[in-house]
Image (cartoon, rainbow, N blue to C red):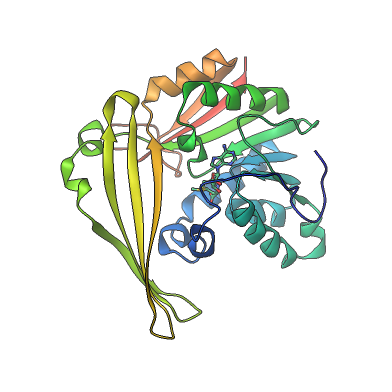
Length: 271
Ligand SMILES: C[S@@+](CC[C@H](N)C(=O)[O-])C[C@H]1O[C@@H](n2cnc3c(N)ncnc32)[C@H](O)[C@@H]1O
């Protein structure tokens, strides 16, 4: 795929091509995620570059790795998320800016014609892949793009089955509220609209109640379906695609996976 100052454009009706792209970086939910940035920065130091980041979104992790001196390609389906990323890249120092490339594409079918020392999928884009075939397609694409000895790092949350299906989550619950720099007051709440246990999916709604500086009120709903995974399922998916798990962490402090771990962070290599 061609590279350039703009992300390459494809026609898409991506989930994130909505208001969510405008609220993503300012939200305390995203701003508060610092531990994963440090974790991926350390991984980049350990495994080197070039790096491919799948589901890079607005480039939250991408920019840090570029500032660390790493060459990095960010791929995402959403044009609006990538527009944000391109704006953020423009604010980097020239040397760092030149190390970052963005590609609009689908992480289940891409061919970049390049091999990478490290492929990362930070903050759960993999949980947007609802079908097993999509998950396999993604991992097979990753393997084709890994340089010999290269690593894949993939994070998903650890599923607490009891909590996952608790009907209490169908009630709208306030998650956070904040005032943005542009003066708008935002309340974010969340609810599960439907459970699909047999398919390991929940239909989730994130509801943004926005009071604009001109007094206007808006209710915006980001509705999406979340695929949740269990530990050995991911290991089997990886094995089916020719990967071996070399590390499995339960959090971004690199603690081992335990019953109470919030995350499942897989470091895998080609077998
Ligand atoms: C929760 S955001 C994570 C963004 C970024 N990795 C971060 O850490 O802030 C999930 C991202 O995955 C992207 N995504 C979802 N499905 C995708 C797919 N099939 N191919 C590429 N990107 C995808 C979305 O567009 C969105 O930007």
